[in-house]
Length: 332
Image 1 (cartoon, rainbow, N blue to C red):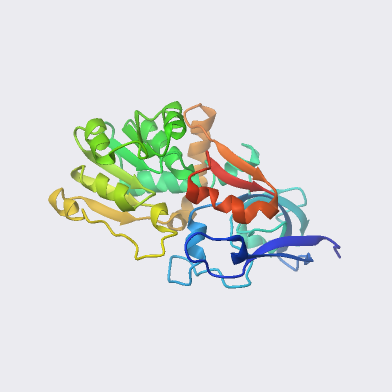
Image 2 (image 1 turned 90 degrees about the vertical axis):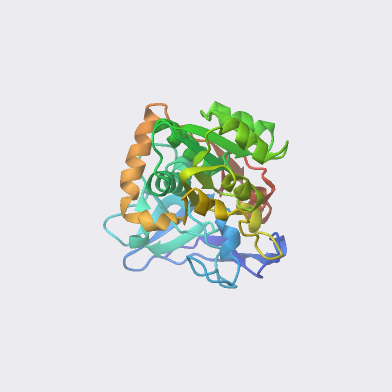
C-alpha cells in the first residue's frame, strides 16, 4: 500500500466572468492504490486549454460540466508508478484525462501509452490534443486545396500555430490573426505568409489587403468581431471551421453571434463546428503523420511551461489575457 499524498484542485464555485482563485479549492488527500485494471500515475505536465472555462459552466455542451467538488478536468501526461494491468509497467509514459493533481488513479483503458519519439510536453501540444484539433479541423472540415487562402484567428495559440503550418504543408497561402507584434513575428517565424495584429488596426481592412481574392478556409478560434470580419471577406464556396470562441468564454452578457452570417448564403459557404473527440479512432494516424513532418523540419512546436501545481488558478487566466506564448502547460 502506498503512503503517498496527493495535492489537487477541485471546482469550488461556478465563476461569473473570469475565474478567480476562490472558484477553486486546493486539497490534500491520501493517494489511492490502483485496483484491478487500474494504474497509479504521477502527473508530470498538465495541459491548460481555453475549453476549460466552458467546462466550469453548468450548461449543456459536448462534455458534461465539471461538478462542484470534483477534481478539475484536464488532459495531462505522466509516469506509471504502479500498475494492475499487464499492458503497463512502472516507468511507462502515459497520457489521459488525469485532472489538475499530482497523482491520478485511473482505469488503464482510459490512458494512452506515449511512444519515445518526442519530449513529453510535445504530446500535450503539437502531437497532443491541440495538434490533433488543428489536423482534423483543417483537413477534414476545412478541406483546403493547394493555392487556396487559409485564414486563422488565434493563430499564435496552440491550435492556430499548427493550423497555419499544415496549411503551408498542403500548398496553401496562410494568413494569421494574433494580438501584438511579438505574436505576429512568431507567425512569420513558423511560416505564415502574412500576420494581422488585431490590436493594431482594422482587421477587415487588413483582410482585404492580404486576401485580395477572398478567404477559402477560415479557421476560427476567437469568435466575435473577428469572425464577423472574416465572414465579410469569404470567397465563393468557402468553409468556416468553428473550433472555439475564446473572446466569448468569459462574458457576463449574452454571447455575440455572427451578424454577417448572410455572407454564407451569398457565397454558398458553409460553417461547421468541430470537436476533436469525433476523430478519436484516427488519432494514431494523425500523430504518425505530424511526427513525420516534425522530423522533416516542416512542423515546429512551442510550449509555454509554468512550474508549480499551486499556480493553477493564476496560470489558467494567462490564456484569456493572451499572455501565453505557445501551448500553455503546467509542470507539476
